Length: 73
Length: 332
Image (cartoon, rainbow over all chains, first blue to last red; front, top):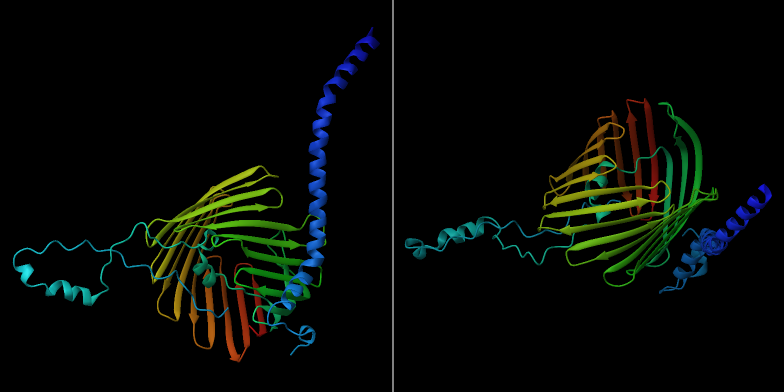
């Protein structure tokens, strides 16, 4: 009898969790994606922002020469 | 640095009560009104629909902060800014000295350190990009973009190699005819908004609200600013228990005096600061004294075309901490 009761409880619990697990997984997926995206953005910004600024600056008018970038004069 | 203190654009002087209609003899003798007009500026009627745009909320206390919180440093500082273009500049900065490490006890712990910072600036009227990177891997990035005439986007990020220590903040600013509003989104689920409105040609009032998601804390604050040609007075109250008042008086073209009062209810901390700001032709000298027993001064002297000498001193009598620094800035 105890085993029957326990089986019933398990069945109910599983049924209860069924629709919930689907919702949770989409929420979790969205959270995972945003976290992954933020991590990648952080790494890209960390390494790429200053090269981006230099690129934009070297292409602005009047165009500076490459040696001006490195020499201290 | 070295730029003169610029108070808000001169608003029209306060209106005097309109003169009563001349009766009898007064009609024949109108000279008194003319004399009054010559003596002081002619009183203008306040146009309540055409008030000036207020200062941004975060710059409410900028005059006081410029005078009372100069960038004091300890050690050697050398800054070199090289302009490649009218808009594009590279900056190199070397610092050698002792950095203060925050400690639990009242002792001051200093660690000798040095770093080299490389930076690139791109300044356009519509787009501003500033990036700085240090030798220990820390990076500081600022972006300011004018999306339309009234809407601006500002991004500020401080990134480090250590995990969970990086910070980022997005700010959307909207500038109306006589008001400004701002919405902020930051990391750690920080959301904030503030709004400031010109209520009269001299007075502007504003408020802010913020919410920190991770600690489930929220706060509300109110601020007011009253300024004329000669003085600026501000007051700020926040629900975090901080009250701040400041007053700056422009004594002459070259001299400003400032004072500041801060009360923190949580830590029962009261601090009052008094300072001066002398802007002379070749130098700028700022000094301040505190009720915590801190005396500080910063001198920026323009030696030559583009070379500026910096001397900084800060003496903390309470903690017995003495900091002296010197530096050179080449370029702007």
